[in-house]
Length: 485
Image (cartoon, rainbow, N blue to C red; front, side, top):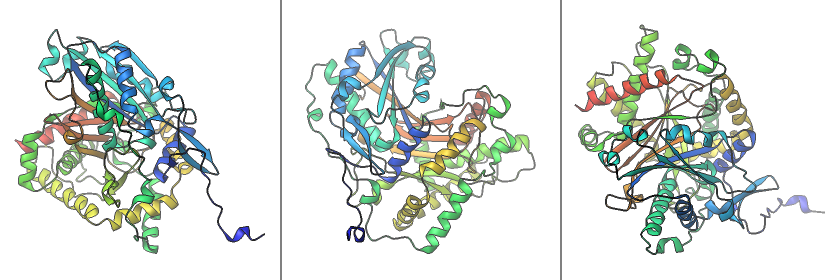
């Protein structure tokens, strides 16, 4: 009779690995409302041997044995989601193979299909053998040699099980497994199954609690974020789906403009800014240039941008990259003082220094990001955000941010497999999310690998034409070149 004095004890499903965290539950919720929550990685490989369907499948299975969440499904009980091990995950793992000169077209269907969360697994793969015609755009001279074969392995994950850091480790494990199978060498690392890290809210530094003003600040932000915020780009370049209602409104496309990292890195160090801040500066000036094409009187970029923060660093103990899960949260950067042009080197570095200072200020003290996160877990849910995402897909609605940036950083320490000289060499990684659903008009995904800053621009056919996206990409490259030269 006194049962109501005590909170109900949670009883997870039998064998559950753990309960999903707030951010992970958001993505599972999105996948139930629409085919959302994707995180796509495209791994480019070159080799002088054939990578068959059977060999690739064996490599995926071997790599997955190390990561429990690659072998899990979702169970729902008492209003909570749980990761639960699959009994037959190997037979349910999906791999499609094809030969094509257009890997983007071959992989686009991955964005159009969702995941059966309750059956699992929460990922699937496409292996594309890129034809000689498709290799003409490859930056690697070796890829043009007749004896060299080029492949793109496209991996689609439900974002609930993986973020950028852990994805780099998974990709490394796949390449390592692939080489060990082809070379007939025992892969000892595949024998070690990793533990499952706790959800973010349970791992953050204890004792950091938000106050009333933290709630007020985040509430104001969310009210603006979830409203039909004015976006300076889409006001001048109306969403394509409004101009052409029959365009594809489900997918993300990528423009890859990787650049050698050493010259940029040296100049950034001299200017005491981060590479991410330099990319922010180039993106700001390029966006301002596009606005001036339609509205010459525009003097500055009147919009904030966003960037993704790695919250693993705010956990106690720090959650290492090999542990899968969702530990990356977006943060809005206030509008920067963006004036000048894409060829104005002084304006470029002034903006980069301002961006660097803001990012460093935010991440230097864990209290602010932790408080922000804990307020958001109480104010934001997938029903409210998912409704906006559905509306955005069909109407071209964007939030008020000019663009967003997500940066994994240098993945070389996480990706030793497939370096030069290996039977299968890993040459490049591109990544994307399905931003056709309610985000800024463009999103930048960064990482450095094999001596290059791999910088891909995500654009969405329901928002922009290819010509408009290319115009933005070219302006960014022009700004970067002018600043570094």
